[in-house]
Amino acid sequence: MREASMASVAARLDRLPLSRPHYALPMIGGLGYTFDGMDAAVVAFLLPSAQTAWPLSNGELGLIGSATPFGCLIGATLADCSATGSAGAA
Image (cartoon, rainbow, N blue to C red; front, side, top):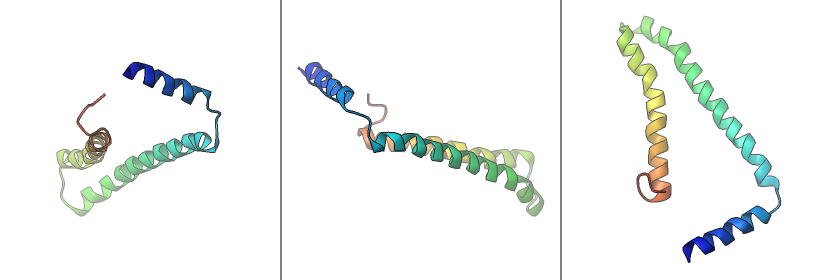
């Protein structure tokens, strides 16, 4: 029964025409990709300044530089869990 209702929902979505929100989605995705790249560039440009301002080793600089992608990973995982109601739900 559930598969039949999901199939009818999928068929209904396939019949809908493209509208303004559909064309906005690539723009929103592109902006997210741009800001993600800008975030990585800012961290990369600031690490040498942080090394001269404070006596940091290369390992400590690597830890600082790695914090951003790991923060994004944790944030994306938490957003998925809050959207689906559980960790890894399909």
